[in-house]
Image (cartoon, rainbow, N blue to C red):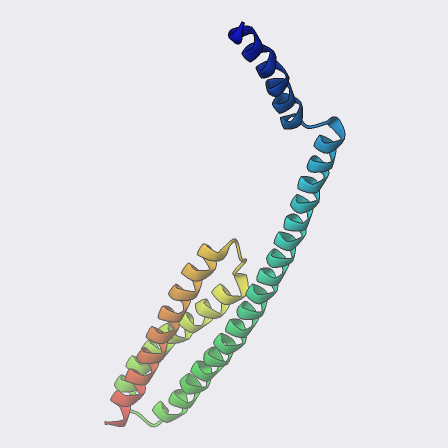
Length: 153
């Protein structure tokens, strides 16, 4: 008898728990709508972050390009000034310097073309290009400086 009373009490209790834990279809729809709304908000935020990042990247590239073009023009000016200075040199020295200047002018032209032809294909490519370009630019600057210093001595 006690067992049957216990079972009779447990059945309604368990049924109540089951009914309370199950969601109605309207609650399920409401939860799905909330999740969709949050996902849309996250998507809009991600799109805005992407737009901001692209704009920053473009601005950084434009600034880098401007500074690099100025350095290239300074190299061209240094080469031109050195050409006028070596005009008074002996023929054999002048020929040697002109040959070196020709190489330096070609490197400068190559850097100018490399900068103009660069197309951004991601952050990794941009970082790699920037590192290599700055290295090449510094090496060219050192070569020009070393050539002009040798002549002055």
